[in-house]
Image (cartoon, rainbow, N blue to C red; front, top):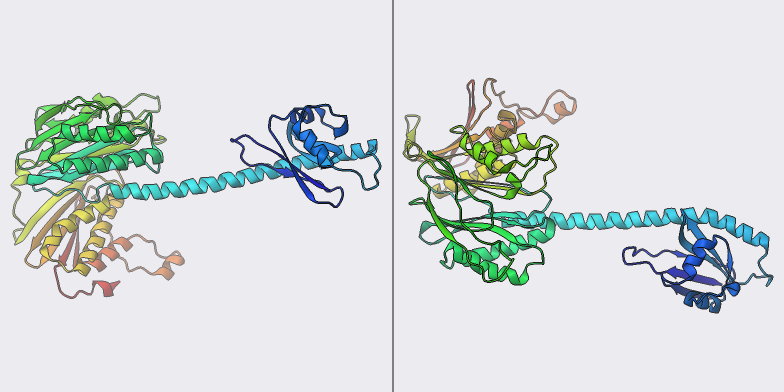
Length: 535
């Protein structure tokens, strides 16, 4: 006979184990034992084979086991825990179980129980590994979706510099930023922070972003946009979650800024008079219905810079558990040397404060809006004493990933000139590679060392200058890659990046001073090129 006993586990232990023992050929009978059945604690304390006929327990399991023909139950105990049982029917000889039989079964149980315990643990580990793999896959997908929701390109405005930086604490974060084109040449600047982290925060972030965008294009004011978004989020946001958000509308022609704040970190503006906070009151989104949001105005003059951030910056802790704090951030902004990237300086201060072993606690988001100085706005229209006209210039922090920002911004400026698509793709590849070299080899991935990029054009050609803060050491000539030599240890990958850049463009020039390396990439707008063949 085969009698299967299944002990129902609680919800937290969903993997139910099955043990069986065949004592005579017969049909299979299943008996399910509830976790509160009195038979279980009895077997736990018995620790030896138990004859069901001698039990006087008020137990549904005992009644079912008797009905199934079970005569003897041998508990399987490992590390003091009942993990199963051996159910034996009548002996084939019809003789009762002897004391020798019981001793044999006790010895068998003492060997079987640890083996079953190991099997249970292995099965549980396999299930947990499979679940971790599923969660990691979902997080990767969610992270990709979230990245598509963040702006792929930064606004390009004559006389203005726009930068953004985002570092999630997990694969998926709750911070977000956005730039929304509006009527009359204005645009909206948004920075938000969803409480909590991970997938739930990312889902709320996506919803909030969509709601803000839909309301921003209706011509509403910043306060009205936040109020409408709040009413929508209150009805749907999970309990215990809310969104802090700063919404500003900038008129690039005048520098006028209208803004409202839903409980978010205050923006900082640095001018010739020092650093000030832009204050406006309002409750976070999604907490209570019927909220109104105070609206304020400011004006960004020439040379002024506004920094928007999330609390992942100000609330970052040092190894001694001291917060970075608002005052230190303000001091860092005020002390920024002229010409250095503000985001790079702030990130450098953050890294110095938290130390090399910092485990990031919250997402960090930074958005910079800077009105170029009068001198920059009236920069020379022609450079090098020739007919090259400057299309624009900008700086980037030496942070991995900024090569894509450089590539996109250069392409945005060059696209109106009508460069052939294939040549445009080669130029983008060269710009990205040159910027990556400047970040890694010139500036050694130090965020406070900017990469300076200038784009010029003349009739029929484009020139891109990429400057790092290295200098002092000549850049080696591009070396033609030789895979066999590399495999033999006779050649390193150093210089292969320059080979790729030279192969992509029509002309490459390298200049070195005691302070800078400068790469000049030149590309004609149309015509055949042997760049592809040189690879």
